[in-house]
Amino acid sequence: MSGLTLENLSMRFDLPSGDHVQALQDVSLEIKTGELVSVLGPSGCGKTTLLNIIAGFLAPTSGKVSLNGKPVTGPAQERGMVFQKGALFEWMNVRENVSFGPRMNRVPTAESAPRVDRLLDVVGLGAFKEKAIYELSGGMQQRVALARCLANDPDVILMDEPLGALDALTREKMQGLVLKLWKETGKTIILITHSVEEALLLGERLIVMAPRPGRIHKQYHLPFADMGVNADLREVKHHPDYTRTREEILNMIWDMEEEIMGRSEAST
Image (spheres, rainbow, N blue to C red):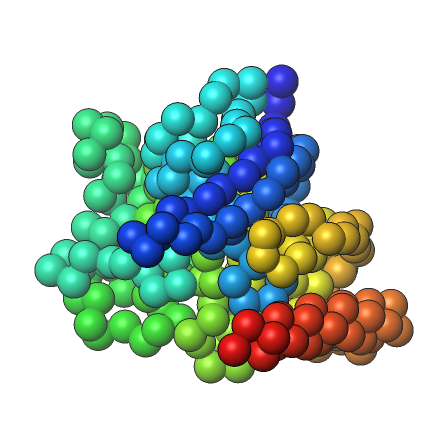
């Protein structure tokens, strides 16, 4: 079966005090190959936990994940992760960082080098191949992280708040780059974000999660990612349907945050 399947995922963390935290509960989802999915929700709703389970960094308490019909039992090359901060190797230059995955997989340099150079051109860093990581801006470092992820040719790209630390202008440029890479590579992309605007722009399908225990509250199938591939993202943001959906989701998240605050006050 093609695509990513989540079946009745639950995740419970047991605490030293004897208490426990139910981070996720019965999350089921089918994600088609090549789909761009954004995941949004209030703080503590299990978004990052969900991504870490898909990546294979965490084993769920119950339920299972499968990719193209094969169970996910741990980290593997077919699932690449881009973190909020690039997690780059400071002692390596740009090209060496992007080449790291193929090198660990023992791909001959003659085979990997042209691919690495092409990816650096795609993300706009062709002229920075020999630069040290500390010489790059935050946005440029995230482009290196994207290229490094793509160098392993994963089926699924997982992004955990990859643009959250960037300034507004750089973030918008990077959003455009994500859309471009999605269309050009045909990769499945799952992106976690706290920004409603970003979730709308970068979600062919947008999933809103409910407060802990994390569950899927609502799903939207949206046209804005496709629109943004060939249009100015600022124009997309002024589309009446974009504005209406943004306000609907903002109100939804606001109500959830109010619910969480009410629980906190009741427990004190």
